[in-house]
Image 1 (cartoon, rainbow, N blue to C red):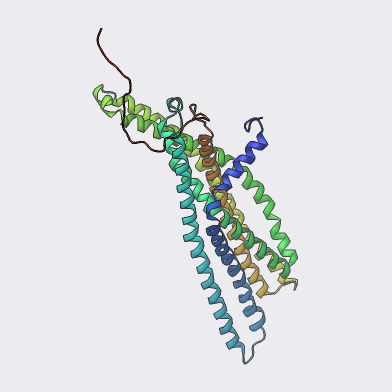
Image 2: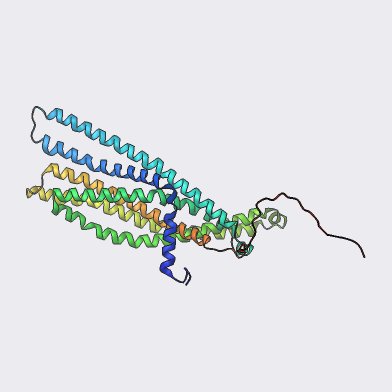
Length: 359
């Protein structure tokens, strides 16, 4: 049974193919993830230090309070400096990791294009092929380097912040957590719409590239026969189709992103309202409410980061599907198993036992 006939094997093969591009750069990926962990840990520790000041030091002022505040201030400054180091590692090394993987994928696809038969190119538009080797590989590189770091930072920040909030006040943390399933259902629905729209937009921009390539490659003939108006009409048609697909994409993106932003803006409001009631009932003090708000902000950040990750995921997976579609096209003409390799080619022609004459 072939891979195409077996969907599970087919998906498994594509999954292995997707992750195989990390193989030469596991060291760089590890450094990038270490930077992501550093970013997350330092971010989680800062509000705890602030809580020590507002809850412990300021409520029991003594002779050593000023010195202790200075020491904690120095610790917070050190955490911020480490946070900067981690972000620099993630930013620079992450982008270089993605750029190197993008280079490898373009190289592989271009080499594969050179093996394909004439029949393949007779049925393909050059602009579409150019789009797959440029736009699609860039979208994949963004996913390859942002994906792991965004997942690590989002998961650590969210899990760490939620665990600390549970320790401070479990009831208020549970109320906050109830908003998340609603937001998740909303996000999943619009993610699917967004992915379909992005796939259509990529196909349409490929059609535009193909139209431009055909028109400019034959510009002499177009001008010689006065076909400028016809070519402009064909280009305008493809351009309008692309605009229509972008409209659907932007509408889906707007509903998705703005909906996520709405939920993130509601979360601090919930904390203030229910936290205020908890203070009235003597279940929470003001220092803990401040800490709750700080960690709510930290919980919101991974939600927004994850929102950006899902956008990259849609674009990257769409690009990867189009990329693999080309790699799975097999050339019609292949070397035989008994083919002889020409190791040394001197470029000389010798005629042996050849005669020529007129009758």
